[in-house]
Length: 246
Ligand SMILES: [Zn+2]
Image (tube, rainbow, N blue to C red; front, side):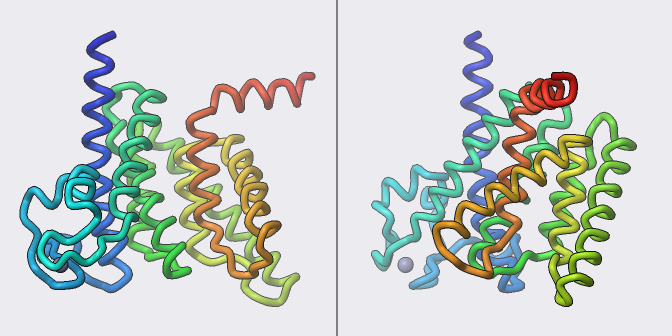
């Protein structure tokens, strides 16, 4: 019991560190910069950060959300992403337990989280992060099935996109959505992929009801629905059984 608590705390801390890295990915990938070099520096005064300025969540709190050197404000997005990634890792760990493929499942969802943030800010999704999510999702015990599910999900969505573009006479679905669908297929399998697709459509209705915007990005809803269905797959099974067998 106590051991599980210690592992959970450890998983949370590792999650916040991955969150720190995701901040770098979110900030640098859309600008075409390297995610390895150079070391982090203040975006305002360009002073390289000291090691103790890079501790997830903690540093931001200690520094009061300001640069140590020039005192300019540091976005709250940084500690928030670290916190969210920490919680994400704990939720996934509590779901899967300490299995060998846990790091890959966590990495796949982390890449999806980075995609979501980049999509929100730039309304575009970088292919390399998108493919990273798919690749990580495929590394699991039943690799062959994951690959088949990914292919069917991506192919299916591609066909739906072609058809709706034909009907609507404009591009209805981006290639980014097709790759995300592949990741969803690999992570969830069937029929859960369809449940997640349905849920994401429901979730996407919420902001369009509040605010009539045409360009609401869709990847965040796909990713959120994938996480929910992944975490609650047992409940989804029960629901599907009830729907089918009464
Ligand atoms: Zn500064």
